[in-house]
Length: 307
Image (cartoon, rainbow, N blue to C red; front, side, top):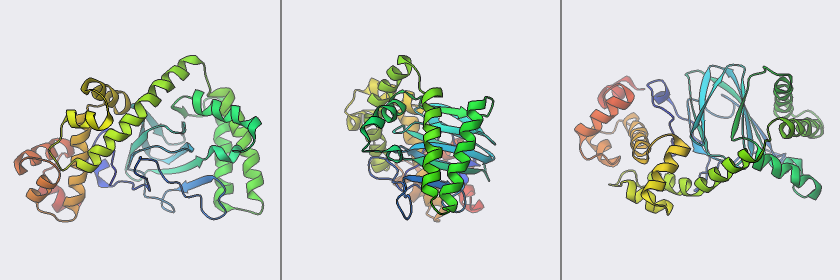
């Protein structure tokens, strides 16, 4: 189970998105039959309504359009509120997660850089420029003509990949190259972005290791020193990485993860004392106190309400 929270609320506690990820927190994207390396995902048909998605990354660039409701993406520790009618661009290989409103609806494009040609040497500089120079994330609100054009292209690519008319790959690839040209001209910036990206990449590997350690050992008695050791960094560096990437301390992340795990067990009607012990809390009373402070109701009430 992999869970990530920017913040916890009763509304967000009602459901979590489960992603198919490997042990390095990389999402395994299923392109469906034919193998055209673009995944077009729609709420209800392909995945749960987006209330909370776990921290993860993938080789694909992501373009998510908010069709209804709102969601807060967290990308390398920075929040990006996304409202109805807006689209977010997330750069490949970037750690991100999300918490959304109830009944929100999204349209997601996951585009592998391979679709632009992984063997065409002359295209590689453009692809690498996008991966290395684009910002971690950008909100497209349609306030400028180029943003409207990007959103229109995304909608057309999504339609083609969902409906799969005859020769859709050709039409989709033409639209994708137009999209690539727009992203290169409008999103890729100067050396400041490259230096920031280099810092984020240096944090990514230890962050992944430390998150995995928490997810595998949250039920045990662990602290900052143990988490830092798992990432191969000093305690101060561990604290800095968590603040930079997740906007919170390692202990805050650990506590929230334990609460998430506890909610899953409570839904299965496990006893509160057993849940507390299984999730790394010393006593049931301390667990109940932290749970109520975080979620807003006591564990037993949460269980009775069937949330």
